[in-house]
Image (cartoon, rainbow, N blue to C red; front, top):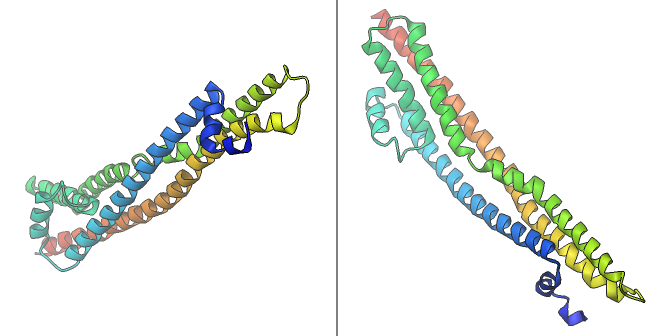
Length: 229
């Protein structure tokens, strides 16, 4: 192989079947991870926007009953905070309809409903994040396996040569190193995206947990005012 043939494409074509399979697999995984990255990026942006819209509406001083009616109508297209509020308010109203008078039972029921809804929403937000973590941790080792295999294959082929030079060794080693390069190409964006998304999801989770506590305080005040009357 001369210098003109030392392009990455030519190196892949000249590589052994195992190395080629490793490279194709890593490229497929890289494409899948980029699909997840863009999907998660737009998804988290939408979650933040919807939660922000609901918080502004919630703190605008609207009647809780009216806000609940609107939240129940837009349960599907609304954000996670919208659904958490709706689940807590729904349970609170159900318990009041059943003539549950104990303030602690009313508040605990609403909080349990909101915590369950919070966990469901968090599971949705965190979906496919583990895939990025797996790509980031496994891809370099898969690429390294392809490199080791390619180097073994290259040195095995040298056994039949009478005279070994750098020119005869270099193409085989270069072919093998392409696998490591593509493994890093797949892993680095996945690791960076995972760390960034994990921080964003932590902030979203804290925001939703804070809302649960604040809404619980509002319900507690309402219970106290109702009991006073």
